[in-house]
Image (cartoon, rainbow, N blue to C red; front, side, top):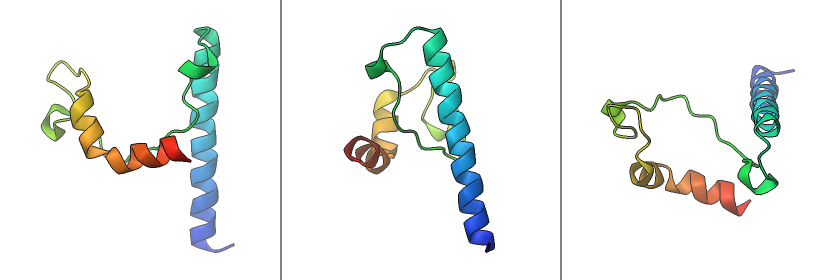
Length: 79
């Protein structure tokens, strides 16, 4: 198996584990199906006040996130 294929498989395993953990937490919280993310995208960059994506109190800046990740969000919701 090539290095690229190995990395793709490893990434899929990591993504699958994150989704499993999200589902388990949602089950414990007794969330409805529509409240549970069906798809996620893992990002390498941190959301910090310096990045402008969160406040100094680490509250999410929704509009800044929408603008910064509009393409990614469109892809997640359309596929």
